Every structure is written in C-alpha cells, then in structure tokens.
Amino acid sequence: MPIVTKGLEGIAVAQTRIGDVRGDIGQLIYYGYDINELAGNVCFEEVIHLLWDGRLPNRKELEQLESELIAARPLPKAVVDLLHLIPRNAPPMHVLRTAVSMLGTLDPDADLNTPQANRRKAVKLVAQLPVITAYFHRIRTNKPPVAPSPKLNSAANFLYMLNGEPPSGEAAATMDMAFVLHAEHAFNASTFSARVTIATLSDMYSAITSAIGTLKGPLHGGANEGVIQMLLEIGDESRVDDYVRSALSNKKRIMGIGHRVYKTLDPRAPHLKRLAEKLSAKVGEPKWLRMSERIASIMKQEKNLNANVDFYSATVYYSLGIPTDLFTPIFAIARMAGWTAHVLEQLADNRLIRPLSEYTGPEGLKVIPIDQR
Ligand SMILES: CC(C)(COP(=O)(O)OP(=O)(O)OC[C@H]1O[C@@H](n2cnc3c(N)ncnc32)[C@H](O)[C@@H]1OP(=O)(O)O)[C@@H](O)C(=O)NCCC(=O)NCCS
Image (cartoon, rainbow, N blue to C red):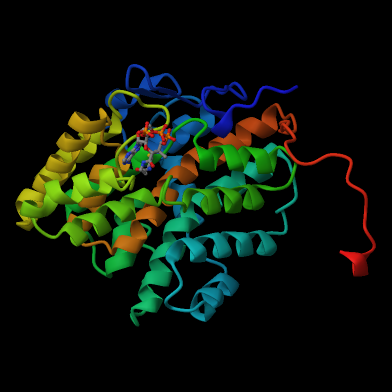
C-alpha cells in the first residue's frame, strides 16, 4: 500500500541545484547565494544568468544576456493580434497563459529539444512575458501599445511599456528588486507543474503554460492580489481587528499570511516591507502599511503565522500605481527566470514524474445495462 502524503507535504521529489527554501530557518538560496546577499547587490538579469548557468555573470556575459533579452522582446504579430482579440475584461493571468501557449504555435523550434533551442526559448519567454502583459494592459485601457525600449533593463522597460513614460529611478529599482525576490523558489506548485509537464518531453511553451495556470490560484501567486482586495475591503485602520478576528472565527484565510514551507520568517518579506515603507511614505498613503502591520501582528499572535512574500509586495505594487490584477502577472514575469531554469535542469537529467495514488473507490462493481440503471 503506498504511503499517501496529502499535498506532497514534506516530500522531496527530486534533487535541484537551482534553489532551496529552508523553511525551518527562514532562508532562501539561489544557486548557493542567500537571498539577503543577492537583494540590493545584483539586478534581475544577473539573477537570470545565475539561475540558468549556475554562476553570476561577469560584465561581458551580463551585457551579452541583456542584448539577447532586448533583441527577443518584440512580439510576433499574431500574438499582438491575439491580444487585440481577447476580451478586454479577461483576467490578465488568463491572457498570459493563452499568449504563451500561442507563442508555442509560432516557434518552428517549439518541439526541438536541444539545449541551444531550449535556451533560445527561455530567452524569448523571459523577454516577452512583460511585453505581453504591458501590451494587453494598454489595449484594454484604450491606449496605444508602447514599443519596448532597447535602452532599458527588464524592470524599467516593463514600467515604461505599462505607463507610456520612463519610470523614475526609484520605481525602476523597486521593480527590479521585486523581480529579484520573486525569481526562484525551488519546488513551489507552479515550478513543480512546469517540471511535471517537461518531464514527459513535451516542450518549453507547454511547461510554462502549465506553470502560469498553476501560479494563478489564490493559494499561490494569486494571493498578492487578494491582499490588496482585503485592505480595500477593510478600508480603515479602525476596522482591522474586527475584520481579522471575524475572518479567523469563520475559518477564512488571510491572504499573504502563512506558508507551506516557511514556518518562521519568509526572508523575502522584510525586503518588500522596506520597499513598501519607502514608497508609502512618498506616495502619502501610509495607512495601507499600518493596516498590514496590524494584520501581521494579529496573525502572529493568534495563529503564530508570518507574512509571506505576497503580503508586502501587494503594497509595493499598489504604491507604484500598478492595477491590482497585474500583481500576479508581475510574479509570473519574475518567476519565468526560475521556471525556465527548472525546465532546463529537468531536461538535462530527465525522468518522467509519475507518482502513485492510493485507490479509495469501490471494488468489484458489475455493469448494469444502461436502461436498467
Ligand atoms: C500558503 C498556504 C496555502 C499554506 O497552507 P498550508 O501549508 O496548507 O497551511 P495549513 O493549512 O497547514 O495551516 C496551518 C493552520 O494555519 C491556518 N492558516 C494557514 N494560513 C492561514 C491564513 N492565511 N489565514 C488564516 N489561517 C491560516 C490553517 O487554517 C491551519 O489552521 P488550523 O490548524 O486551525 O486548521 C496558507 O498559509 C494560505 O492559504 N495562505 C494564504 C494564501 C497565500 O498567502 N498564499 C501565498 C503563499 S506564498
């Protein structure tokens, strides 16, 4: 009889060199570097190189990767047409999933499974997801899409394409740091689903389509959007205590709190909290942050649960003026670095992922003819 571990909790299903989440001590590692060592010291493109190649790039390698990413930004016309066709009120995560799936139909190498072809696909996916997100947002708000700027890095270019004007240095640096913090997280649900898909020797686009569909759920990437919805619903600091206590007594989950693996601190949360503090002070709406702190403190006290990455990233994005339904797409844009790295790693030493299940259904039934049922 197989041993069943619901939700695969505590089960290691493969080895990886890319990242590690050490839940007991609140530590996150990207290829040997503690996230606290990386945050503020490297840019998103350096992290992409680290995750794909296992080491930080030198200046020449970084410039090479940056040029590859910039060159890969323009979308195929068919995808631009698709973005015009998709209903404007479609949730952006559905749009991302659909557009990535379409990219697979347009790439003649989609099913070519060589390291070179897969690397090209990884570059394309990292470069184009922000473009897809920004284009769709411009289209749905009746604004002309903005062409990518070859002068800007991934984070700054995303904000530029979203808003139609170059971001401030602070906004660009904040977005870059958010990308760095969200880039990789070991065998989280979306990365795992990407690995399950590619392990059948399907293709990179299919694996990433699976990952986007998985990230979208409110128990995973969708939580950041839920945080801001909750803050808006609470509306005022005076209502926080009642809201949280009533949610707890009704067994409702507070978005952005708790984690399957981190049982102490989520090491990404303090970085995002610091960014949120800086921005909220400037934007002149510090009440969201005060409300968040109060929620976090009640949750710590009542349930011994901590804020996770989504809790403060929500306030950061909100303060940057980003629409709430783009919060999870931003997570996807950053995590594309980790997803593609894991797909490449899985392919380098592949084994079909096929777990067992414990059957609990009935036995020995006989078919009754259809008109007697
Ligand atoms: C992330 C998450 C799915 C992890 O879930 P999990 O590992 O299944 O955690 P558990 O369900 O075992 O949680 C243990 C206890 O804490 C409670 N709990 C966990 N997260 C909670 C939350 N956000 N709000 C209220 N209660 C929560 C559970 O109900 C459970 O309580 P009980 O023992 O009284 O039944 C969960 O914490 C959650 O739903 N968080 C909100 C969504 C979120 O922020 N997701 C992003 C993760 S990065």
